[in-house]
Length: 134
Image: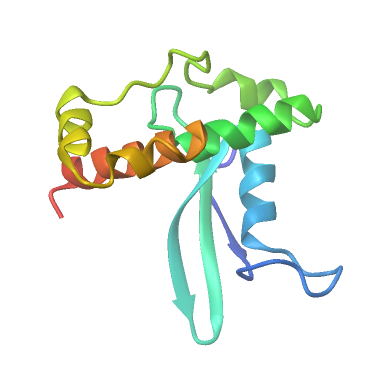
């Protein structure tokens, strides 16, 4: 039961079959109940920290969707399932203040034309940004 590990990863899509890429590492981590966090650049190397998820830790809508796909593919492990948040269709709700602000914006009709996953990810990002007081 390790507390963390650091991987040297490349960004983007694999150009060679032996490369280990960020998105691949994130999906493997999700299968086993781990998550990526801090990134370090050491010289010309890019290191990514991975650690076990806490059962009540926050989940992005994008990672929830990745987990749904990984489960359909039969890749999730019991360790990964153990830390899952509520995954039902009603597990996500947009904060009423954020929804009201979006509806007032000129882009609301265009926003509603995007697929539901995109809408959830963007609403999550807005809420996260507002909560972080950046």
